[in-house]
Amino acid sequence: MNRIVSNPKILGGKPVINGTRLSVDFILNRLASGASEKEILEDYQHIAIEDIHACLAFAANSLKNDINIEMEFEK
Image (cartoon, rainbow, N blue to C red):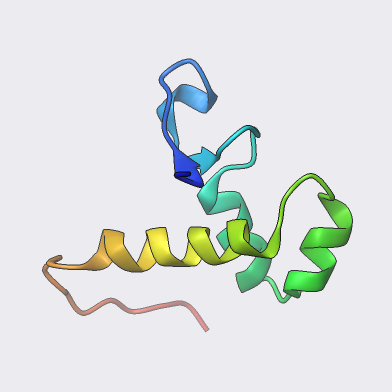
């Protein structure tokens, strides 16, 4: 089963966890903001740890073969 899907009728085609309206970027932003996998699973009991891992894998795969440019971030 593919855990990450994209459908133009759901969130404008953003990649989401299959069977939900939780986008990959939403889950990644939760993790980046310091939420633990456990907290996310408690807040969204209809997803599994494998869904979170699929979001991370999707992001990693999306960055393959990209051209890297130097970026400056605000501190």
